[in-house]
Length: 483
Image (cartoon, rainbow, N blue to C red; front, side, top):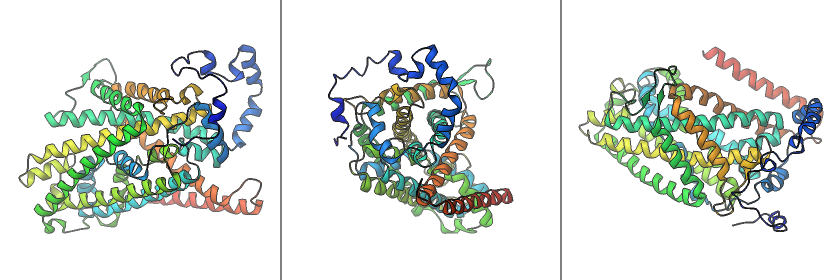
């Protein structure tokens, strides 16, 4: 394990047990919370403190050298580019390709869904490059939160922290509910809610209790807490197994498929291609979790670019080939909207293959949960290091090298959300928070390239802001015109 210089300072005092941190000082160490008078004094300085938060920006050195001290123990640098490629694959390739391809193909793009996946993959790659550039220069656990704190300031980072925590909780809960739905569909396709408990006294959208989703979340997060290296090895073994199943699907699709099913290739025109691209883009989300592992990469300058760009390139190729195989197996007008691959295998006389598809989808959701729990906990750790939530959640276990308290926080809250909340409610919230973070990171990268505090001339700053404002307005205008 590579050691930071600040570890030498920690050896001057006797370390406390990780499990004995239950005092008020552990949860609220700031002077503000020492007593009622100190709290009143802090309130009286609210305007000046708010001004400081609005204008203050962090720095690379502070995020890299000072904030990790809040965790007392360092995370273990145990990940290589190979681990990061498969972490990216495991985080992104969940059930999305199996669930939304059918609807997007039949209603929006037809066989041109292949191009829709390519367009979405290109768009996702642009976001990946933003994250890669930041992760190489600022290899910390906080990912986008740290990037925004450095370039856009504490206030924007505070807004981002809320979105990140919301995304973490909603994303985990949604995956848990999806896992239980897909598991139920193996036994009964007509009613995927039959394993859930209906409570009539609760409102619609919150009245189907899902204990299976809770169990899945608890198991996945417990594995993530046990150690980064162990979780990574388990993930890439499972991801390689999933890759073999995908190869099977591709071989069958190309051997049994018919090229005449690809005609007409553009039944809905270019507009349909881009509308489908917007839908299938969600099959590419999750890569930001890999950027959060930068603090545990052995050589961030090499491992992060290879891991992020390599995994996204691999995923884009896989998605395009899988979409092509589906369209060759069945005419796009006959593709099932909800279970496209299972029905396609039935259409070519391989009814048994639908179980392989279900296993692959369940495996994908499981690895997404594993990698997601790792990334979400590290987001939470960095937010706690900055004292935007209690620094108690920033503590890293000395033996496992993982932020156990942060993982427990995300696990328990997401389990409660997953128990009550339906998928349609969760997906709406998740979409909003995810897009907000991607947008902020792209803007932060522009700021990093074109503005340096106390160095960039005022005229250049004005030009930059005008260009940024013009770009934003043009995008908004295009969206309004499109709809």
